[in-house]
Amino acid sequence: MEIVGIGIDLVEVPRIKRAVIKRKSFLKKIYNEKEIKLSDRGAFRYEELAGRFAAKEAILKVLKTGWRKGVTFNEVIILNHPTGAPYVELAGRAKQVAESLGIKEIHVSISHSKELAIGMAIATK
Image (cartoon, rainbow, N blue to C red; front, side, top):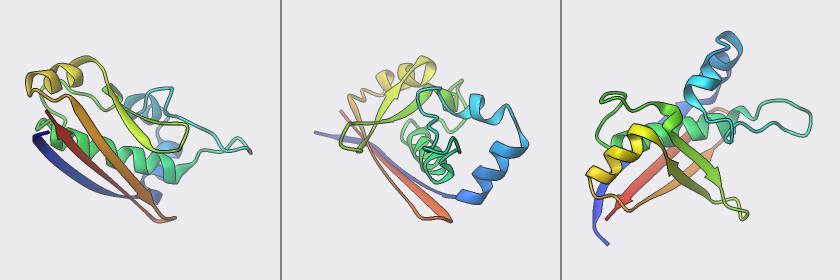
């Protein structure tokens, strides 16, 4: 297993919360509909959204594109196994870039508190 890239990103949870509240288009621009979960009370889980945002940023670093080369945030999809562990699905241009780099798998880890969320990604051949 050869490492192709490593990425990490840190996000302030209140920043994501403000973006969701102030800009209606933010959720659709950043997240796939499968990623947006509500709590039992019907409220957004801002810590989880921030963690996914940080993981997406980390993955864009792994792909060596940032927001360039036609890759968009909602093409990087962070879901959870039944155990709760996060995993990555790529679509569109993000998937094409990963394939061109020979990436076979992207390992991702997310952690958060009430104020901060961190995402880390490691891509392997």
